[in-house]
Length: 553
Image (cartoon, rainbow, N blue to C red; front, side, top):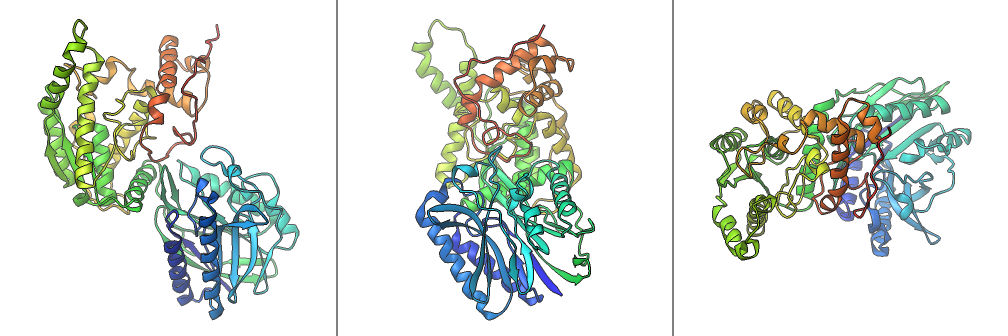
């Protein structure tokens, strides 16, 4: 009999002492359930992904000192530990896992397959380890491939099986994107089939800048049966029981969690990403411009669910083009959510700017410049409130707007974090409707209608001039979002997008807008990654760029 505890926890980047304390507490808790071994996630001691932080010698040395202290704890003959950390060996820096038992570090293993795509650039900072052999832990030969080692084609798991491993333990730092868990199951099942070994997949939890690690750890036995499925987006320690038979090790079936799907999963990821960004960076609360529109409404709902209504403050910033309908919708939304709501008219600062600029603007026609002054006045006021009260400003622009530059730099783009930055406009509407009918499992908000229906059904507008609507300058959002998904996530040619039924001239215009808005996106707040390709980490395009796709005849 072997009891293995799976620690699906939420480390804090760079908080080495805090992460060590979490590891110690988890080991103590697991020991009370008779665990022989506690399995932690990739780079748990440092937090993942540390990026260039691991290039600081003092940081790496502090991580190793924490490992020595944790190893000393195991002299009590209690549970052993498998935990991730950066290690410097022979002048090379590795993404490593150490095995601790009997008061010592009994083994070190280094990641072989370093991911260098999308949000990952590990080859920048880490050296690749050699193909590993199994670790003998109390008479059991453990294979410990690290995350990407089971995703690639370097044969790490196969090598471990051929060299005598009886059980595969895989520490991971796999970030959320829609439908990612199904893909993880497929990857693991391929390894189980190829090696004939059971596999424990433990995944990190928590928000780290743009990335959200969703947990969802699981076990597949060698017979391909799912023995354990831990929840997503929740910290948990699961103690699993293993028995050795003629066919090797087998895990007795444990809990199979019900997992959030589709809209619920996306919403919960946005919520966890915002919660951890605010809490881990030490903000006491958040403020946002509450305009009466759908984007600010969903962001306010996410904030209340993530932080609690008492930590959210909505600010309505009306000008002459703000309608009574918008004023009512914003007030109704704040009341439904239970958050603080204030009104700060912007007529004086806007008119002041216009007056100051009037000598320079003389002889010109009013245009988008004057419209942007309204947005920039609002951004200045929100940032002033942030400075005065220590609140973090939330930005509320969706991915559709960020894609085509339908946002004002130093205006509504001001702020520290954007929970819907990777959510297209059509999906924003769907999330609003979903939230009115459901409440997330980890929500601090309440059930019921929290976004007034009128906000969802009315025609979207920035209200920067009379009778303005978004569709004055953009295609209808269902069409726009389809084009953008083709351009951004699909890297499709203009000809391929036109073949889907879109007008060629419109597609070319949208492609142009996406390219010329790159300079704005470079200066935008970070936001939760939801899709396979977000702006920033995944999609890195030059600002200076004259390339445009050629439409095939």
